[in-house]
Image 1 (cartoon, rainbow, N blue to C red):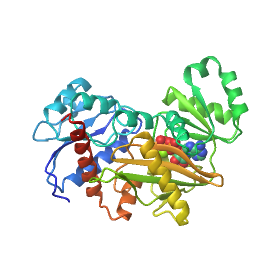
Image 2 (cartoon, rainbow, N blue to C red):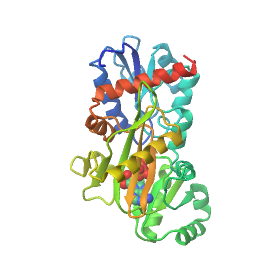
Image 3 (tube, protein in one colour):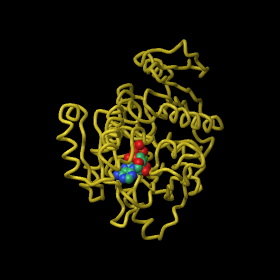
Image 4 (cartoon, rainbow, N blue to C red):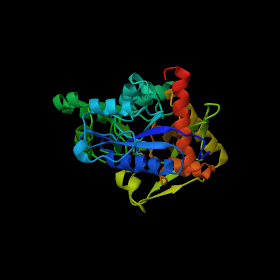
Length: 348
Ligand SMILES: Nc1ncnc2c1ncn2[C@@H]1O[C@H](COP(=O)(O)OP(=O)(O)O)[C@@H](O)[C@H]1O
Ligand SMILES: [Mg+2]
């Protein structure tokens, strides 16, 4: 498959979100993989402060002094006339449907989920509400809006105490990579963690603490049929961390990722069907990775990722490799899927 596509691919990486560094790794891994194909690659870097570095039509590197505004960046991106834009951004303004919307307006095909699914999955609260309607298990929570918390802190803390018992889990509604998340064992932890979560976001979720085995369910769409298929599950065991936090995620030796997850077939099948159901319910395209917790009360969905990390060491590529899919073929599959989706809509 490596040489099947001869195509112009603009890879967008970096971005303003707290996951800038992770996005650079994902983007670079994609660029490296495509270097061994017949694709022509244009790396488009969004800096931390939101300016764009867009190469010219021969793909040469650009110096930071040539950074342009997002509006100009989009114009230059369109001028490259890419066959597809590979979105390698994580978090807000990349994974949340906003960039996808801009690319729709420019009639540029792109990889991954569309506007609605990206936006929905980026909102952990609405994801839970939707998945619950689809019969999936999600844990109890209280939503904390920053503005209400600032004006009625006691009332909000009271509501949390009445709904949930310590320990609880606190996280921003629209972040990734465990940024601003943590376990609160008591009231003072809760107040500290809410302050942190709300420094990253307009809303936070306080959830019951799920105790069990953490799994992630990787799903990719079959390029030919468009139907989602589940890849081998991965079990995540943080080492020396209460949960799969930022350091555990990105530091070697801080967590064990076991693929395929050592589970009875019936449990694996159940988790796979939950991941597929979540992918379909959200309307994901190309790829998704649903985080779940296997508890003694059943398998709870934690969240759905529409743009999971794509370095060769990341969870989804590991699962793909276990299924015999090389990293480069995973990347090419996403590209074909993106081009196919645009053709389907008849917009390009
Ligand atoms: N309710 C919860 N109970 C226990 N652990 C949780 C809960 N929610 C999240 N976690 C832990 O925090 C990690 C990050 O939370 P998640 O919702 O997946 O956000 P992110 O988008 O940052 O990955 C999860 O992988 C899991 O280890
Ligand atoms: Mg997660």
